Image 1 (cartoon, rainbow, N blue to C red):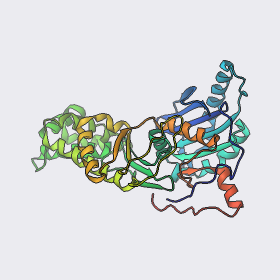
Image 2 (cartoon, rainbow, N blue to C red):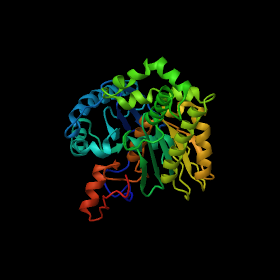
Image 3 (cartoon, rainbow, N blue to C red):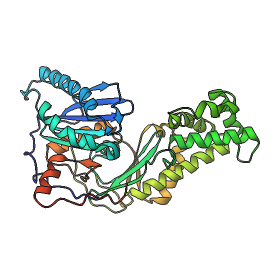
Image 4 (spheres, rainbow, N blue to C red):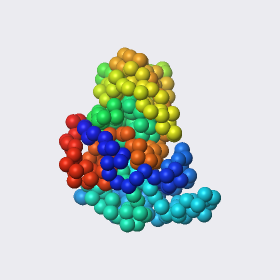
Length: 380
């Protein structure tokens, strides 16, 4: 997916000073999180949580519902910061704001259409970035260096960049992909349990015991599972049971090895294998990327620990020799704040893209100047 970076001075206001406020937002299935920071300081000054997830309807993500939660939270954070400020930063002035939202790439049309004007009117936002949650996960994990991030939870997606374009692999949901994610592992574990229940090959008595302990009689599981609207989450809830059995059960261990293979394949598909030095940024270190690339792991999936991580490191070493496998430096909220800070300072080096990382003012100005880039994503 290609969209060449715009020059920081090609559009929009001049870069903000180090004392200017920036806001990062992470909108996901568990609610809305908001962080307030400053351009010249690493990390957040304060954060707050709005527990209600932003609604999604026929028109996509509900921009009005997001604003109803974001604006009071942002004003509260700004008021608290102004009361405690000792350096005279202008109260309420927001130099840049970045929003990362689940579904932004495919369901974010209303956000892209409505938020720029609404946030400029309500908060005086000078620069705005609207990003897919995979992009904020990337920014939180590795900052603005080239590399790849695997975000694993109930699902699984890999995102990589050489700082010229984005590459995506998987993240297609539990019916079409998310291979190696929590729902995939849980379903494979339940399949092995049901095979043991039936006496078929490939069954695991150990996993059958865990199925009964968690869900009750095996023959009642379909009735419990199929009517549920949250089937992926129910499947993923069994993934830790697979990991717990892996040390003594070869079937469970084989499931995790297969999951590791899928995850490593997705990482290899998006990771730039050749790179150039990346300039340091104040909040993430910014060291050079090795020839094999950097792969950062983020998300609850990897809290399963060594039963998954050990085979994953082996698979990555095979597919990406020389790659550095790291834990994420920060979460998607950290990533949104980093994007806002870089945007305010005129130093956003992550690739712009019309749905993955949309910067409205730059996009509009580039079009007027006749230099708008192609909007067609190459992949993802």
